[in-house]
Length: 314
Image (cartoon, rainbow, N blue to C red):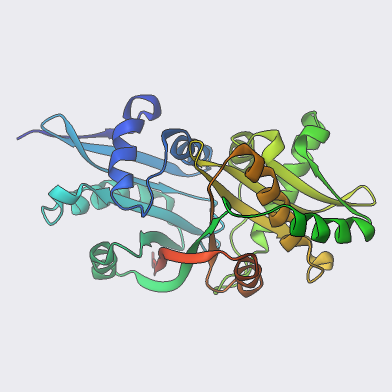
């Protein structure tokens, strides 16, 4: 029996990494969507991505990276995934040891890991290694195949009467505007309500990599007097079937005015004529305002993700 652990090669390993990842997803993710996530991670200031093969077959992968808004400031996000058929054989422990050799050089304040609610065994495994549950990230799905545009148009017109218009990054070409949207995105993600206070600030390189993975027409802005007061981001999660609402946020002094609701409506309105059947999103259990927006829109909760943390003492 031959075991090989090496650095992840995104182009070469992506199909097999996705195969393992989709064992734990309630709805499989397509290749392009998953590649966007892993590519963004590679632009973190701290990052390690490895795969494990046994007898030339990939049966596990693991990564750790910095700068995620899901993690408390100074924490790294860690994830370890092992093929269903090879669990309880010590593979996860091997991958954890490889990451630990890297982590102890960095000496972060702690680690954060994310486990699908459909996979309680992995949660137990993480808890055995000192992780404790911090909160839940709710996953929700909206059937947009039956949505009509008339009620949406009425609400969007109401916002326009208040002077708020809706644009996309197609309306703001150029490097200067791209840097501007990066800074707005970074400031909004840092300010998302989470149970442990303000989240970590996304690093510039990671934010830029993430935003470059979105089509300009899928970066929607709420604009008031030439001021960007809110954004929503979406990308294709399942080709021609499902769009993922990755993030929605408004600046502090414009909250409570229905802008986040209107931004999500604008996103849904764009998807309907394109034939998408569903929109999916995730929200922290402590982000009550956004959860209420999703409920008002008709999103239905699906199995979510546990967010667990582990404090490290050096």
